[in-house]
Image (cartoon, rainbow, N blue to C red; front, side, top):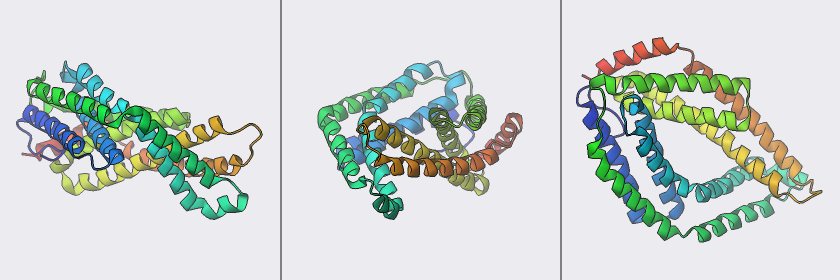
Length: 295
């Protein structure tokens, strides 16, 4: 089944089916492994979906901590390689978007890009790709055997209702904190909450597709905007930490990154304030009503 609830009855079974499907997608990607970076992207995405699903049932699922830790551990094994690949892509995008300015200001963007590519290759060689994928496959298979035993301390809408409310409250609180302190890690924490809320909305989308489809599209836009903001922060931190003493050539690049981060942050806050305008109680009533439309 798709990453979504299809009906208001049999909720526990749907949760288990959705989890199994995501595990199977990850296992299929590992078995094919046509491109390591794409394989890592796919299995990490499955882990994110699984962890968002688990957060939805967290208040009524005693196994939450163990299962969440298991999927987080799988994703974390690949985080170094994934982050290195993302840094290369972020730098490529930056050069393409600001190439003329970089050339005029004499920033060694090509040299820096070569360093990032070499770093990514070196990290992949150190990791042992086949061994890591084999470990991930073993962990996913073990998780797959546990899923049929997942039991919840509620039924029907009670399985998802408390977690949905908690997810929305978390989104609003982290937005408020990011607006007050718009620093890298604070904004990144908001991004993670926004991503989870997006996944929750996708799970609810079939209940009211005329409304939810556009909401999901715009939440995805918010997540991508915050993701770009975070990727630029990581690249900026790396440039600062690796620049040679007295090297001023990176100043222009860092200035461009700062400008783009500011623009992305402004866009994200405009979107976020709209999504968070409704009170938690009002949102809860609305989504309860949507749920009833599933039939």
